Image (tube, rainbow over all chains, first blue to last red):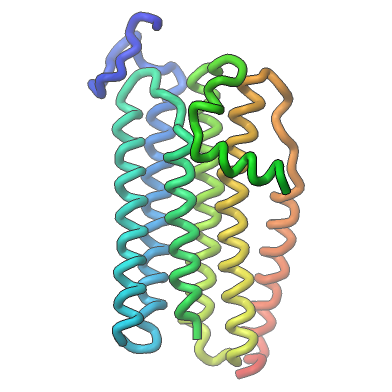
Length: 114
Length: 130
């Protein structure tokens, strides 16, 4: 492992930083995607209440919120990993989790289309 | 079909991906990750658009509104699945030192979005089905 490769989550300064700010840009990409997820989740939540707040709709709404929270947590974990000067590659499991949240929002909302 | 199953299994078995080839420069992996996130955002925009059609075009006839919403939702789901599949294939190609995979998906998506947009303009202009 080269010198300056910190994986303990502390911010690295000076010569350690990536010359192209790649971790910074990747962190911002996660933030933008979290924002997009929040918008999609709001619309999915609104969709579930579109036909009235019956028990089934409330259950689906709870699942929508859960999917959004799951995305928030996986994004946050990845954003924290970006603090290293040479962040480890994204794990397929984390990528699958993010995709699963997106699919869940689509399916849950679609179940309440009228 | 067997290759699709093998790829899906690879999503949940990161160790298997790491055994192939050499670890690429972390900057290339991060660039691949950003591309994956850009596709995921596109997927979320399509999913959100699907709900928006259903909620904000109440004047449109039900069959047409439902069809547009379902096309957008299905498009979003496909985009999300394609995002992870493409990311995985790029990561593997980088590890093996192969060419990056080529794909018709962006073109198909662009044409599909164009057709849906045109349909919506027609719906909005003529109050079709309303």
